[in-house]
Image (cartoon, rainbow, N blue to C red; front, side, top):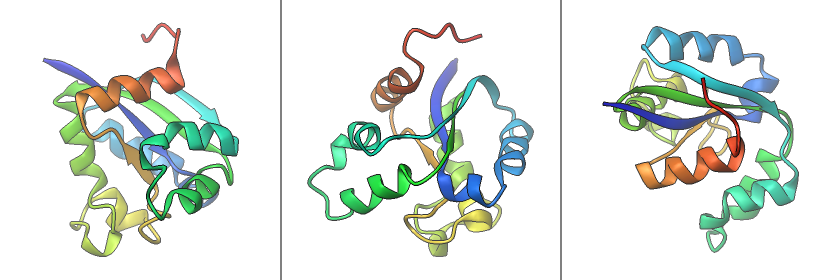
Length: 138
């Protein structure tokens, strides 16, 4: 069964001109890219997107970082896309990420970790709607 998930190429990776390499890896792993947008989140938009983390100590730093520059948001589709994308990304902490994962290869720190991905079907539905509401996904 096909599944969709949100992927974000975060501002650190966009700034370092890694977008093409990350997209190539996404396609090489068999994902279909159903939609893609380049965005620059305002602080308010970043706070809305990460609202679930509002009480966490890293919330302010995270939202400041995510609104610091352009990012790429994508709708990825594949069988078991959520798990498959999270596996390709690797652990949040690049020091703990498996060799061959995007974060092991491209992340600079826990916060500047190059990519984001939905962690569950409910989260994916919410996150996809946040960035692609009303858009016909091809």
